[in-house]
Image (tube, rainbow, N blue to C red; front, top):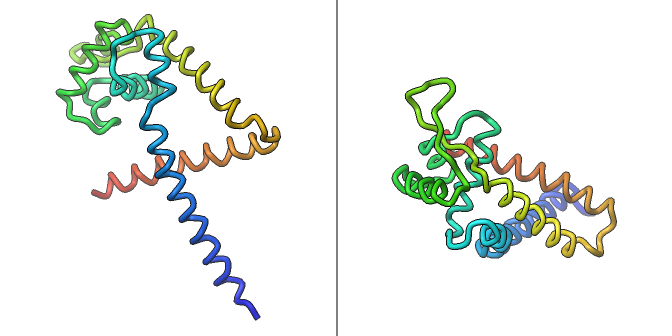
Amino acid sequence: MTDAPQDDRTMASASIERIADAMSQWRLVFSRRYIGRGALESVAPGLKHAHLDVLEAVHRLSGRGEATVGSIAEIINIDPSRSSRMVSELVESGLLKRAVSQSDGRRAVVELGEKTEGFFQAKRAIQRDLLGKITRGWTPAEVETFAGLLARFVEGLEAGTRAEVDRS
């Protein structure tokens, strides 16, 4: 007779290993920055893929309040001087702009610039095209299930890593 709880643990452990392996492979694939580089090339040729993290950080921070050089550095885990240099380069390109904080006039904030919408439109178009090709043979139900599970996984991953950082 089989011990069902042990079998469940063994299956879960094997599945966790598959997820870990897939995450490692995903990291290698995403490190190429295909989507972001393509979008960046279309609106600001010459910038490096490291600038993509800054743009994404400002975009996310803008939805929660004001973005500063320090908060950008913190969210992408770089030192503030590097964050400042990259922000300056993005300001020069027109993708970001500096402004004065609405809550504290002494503080400088970083906002999305005139070209930023073009960048995010290009990025979304490349993403839709690539994801459409990847999921071409999937049923609509499979795409919907994957979308929900992936969003749930990323939310948990973000919460889990934030908790780890808070503990250290």
